[in-house]
Length: 192
Ligand SMILES: *Cc1c(COP(=O)(O)O)cnc(C)c1O
Image (tube, rainbow, N blue to C red; front, top):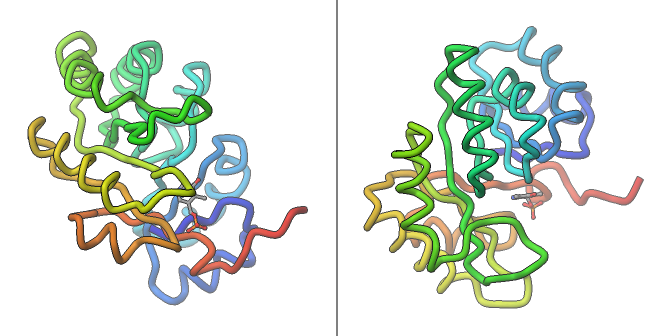
């Protein structure tokens, strides 16, 4: 997946022209401003939401995206279930795991993951497809990818969203099905 957050359409166009079809964004408003014009012009684009999602944005997110990688709390599950039903859509859903237990980061703690995934399925009727993780910036990523893979396997989840520009080869070695690569494709995100 090419992570196009902060880049405008003129930077995204050449990447589409090169054949890339799967893109990631981390803000609903930004994606809404940029993507409808691009998906109108180019067929087969898949748009993935990889950033934290507020429940009150579930309606817009379900309308705009093909996948959400940041399912991490019951209130969001409830909002997504309601909107998926209303809009008659089926999105690919990933539960985000906070493998490092970092307080500033979103995601479900590893020890709570099994219960949360069951709750998504049983209480909200959500079909969960996979797991996502963002390892702590200052740690070796491999143990975090391994842990995420283990939680996925014991919950029969097939998709693994892990790996970014700096560590995607390691993530692939640990079974990633979706690597989220931004700066290695688009260049560095300079402050604007
Ligand atoms: C920005 C972002 C990426 C891409 O990061 P790069 O280091 O630029 O590849 C991947 N995942 C998430 C959740 C992001 O917010």
